[in-house]
Amino acid sequence: MAPEEDYFRLSGRSANDFSWWTSEIEKSKAFDWSDYLLPNLEIEPHTLSSPTLATAVEEANGAAWTVDELRSAVEAYLDMMAHDRAGKPYVKKQYYEKLAGKFNRTAKAFEYRMQNISYVLSLMGRDWLRGLKPAKNVGAQVAGQIEQLLAEAEGRQVAPIVAFEIAVRDEVKKKQLPVPTGSDSPQPFTSASTQYARDPEIKAWILQQAGGVCECCKKSAPFKAADGMPYLEVHHVRRLADQGSDQVSNAVAVCPNCHRELHYGAYSKQLVEQLYLSVERLVCE
Ligand SMILES: [Zn+2]
Ligand SMILES: [Zn+2]
Image (cartoon, rainbow, N blue to C red):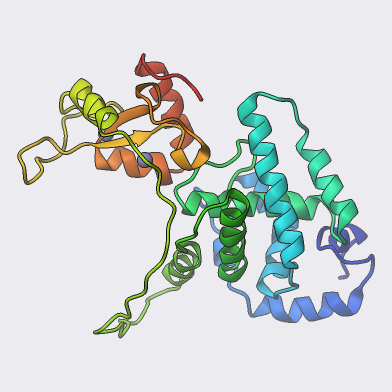
């Protein structure tokens, strides 16, 4: 059974490119589909439709996106995010169509790429643009490129983690992993990362206000630190990397569980909304 014209279009191919299609079929037989076919928290039912599969095939088979295409997608993503934050009106579809006009891809292909960018940001513990639910059908290599391009566009140093995390996820979903050998002497390497100057008075004030109780789950700090202080961490609700301020109106004291969830949780956006409602001093940035 041959696919409809739409299939080719979604895959960024010219209509009825059957020789490409037959080669894709061969390759897709070798691809591990389990992740796309099983119910999973990170994939909403609507993203399980065939276009996602088409994109996944394309990804798995390295019908390569050029750096230029990826860079343009990343820049458009950050531009949409800036509009969103500033409360300025913008239409996502117009961004995709503009990109589609510039490159030989469909607007839909760019939309999925944007969801991959959300996924890369989520692996970095960063905020992503609402309405662009993270889609994990992206290979480690392209994801690593996206990570680099984000750093480049934001003028930051990159300490790469995304390709590693995707490799971990690819392994985890395999059945019955043999015990790996690992290394008895991991190679050290030095990487530069961008830090932000923070005021110790802000952190001290926030910790004092919290009085040893997590401002997110409202439970006591889970343990005492070596110096006897209740262990809580200070989180910037709008991340410093997202141009958030280092002020008491943007910081909370949270337990390590809540802190991780705020960065990596599937429901982190809901947690943030809850914080804005329950912690009066917070101002949405
Ligand atoms: Zn907590
Ligand atoms: Zn944090």
